[in-house]
Image (cartoon, rainbow, N blue to C red; front, side, top):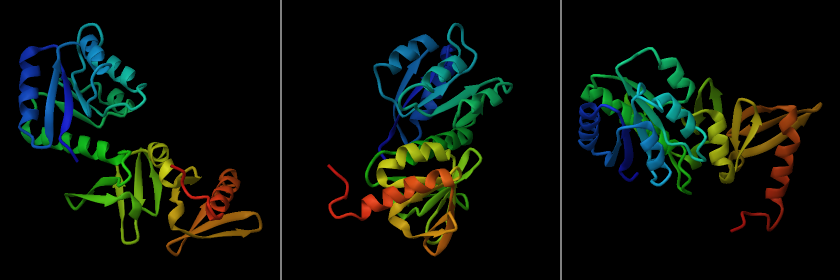
Amino acid sequence: MPPLRVLVVDDERPALDELAWLLRQDERVGDVLTSDSGAEALRLLREEEVDAVFLDIRMPGLTGLDLARVLSRFRVPPPVVFVTAHDDHAVDAFELNAVDYVLKPVRDERLVEAVRRVVEATGSVSDTEDDTIAVELGGVTRFVSRGDVRYAEASGDYARLHTSRESHLVRVPLTTLEEQWRDAGFVRIHRSLLVSLTHVDEVRMDGGRCTVIVGGEELAVSRRHTRELRDLLVRRARPGSGPRG
């Protein structure tokens, strides 16, 4: 993954400069843009592409929460890390799908963790053909190929990715994976299950109940998704029905 390009927003210049300096010390971070107001940051974000925004909350005019709400309506919202001296907005922050909430004064090791979460978030929804997902296993970050994922299972605001050997919990909602991986052959078969059609070995119908066999495991297909799934599999099985360029 190339170095991150991030934007730091804080109305207090000393805090802005310090956070920008700390981020530049992280080898995973490349360009660091800065802004001292929410309104200026919004103008900048309409002209520049960034991988993440490190955002103060209490600012005059357009607050950090206000700016995050605007960013959530972007076609591809950048991950947001709130960096604030106040701990009373954490619930609001995570309702806006912030990837982290860091309290000032910022400790080096805490910022390292925040950058790790940004890397995980950006890696998890990459649009590249050879997509990889950053996952945590025993305190170590590993990268799992999307092609190895047989199915994904909803787990609250997270998703559990199942491969042939193990499963991994990632901080990405199943609905996000569904949107990002649709063109890669992943289809929703249940409100809590997303399956890779490549790994579907068999479709079974029994008394109107539909299930799929994925790697020897039987997964239930909800009634509302049964017809869509069968139509997709039939289309993929027809000669000449492969992906169109």
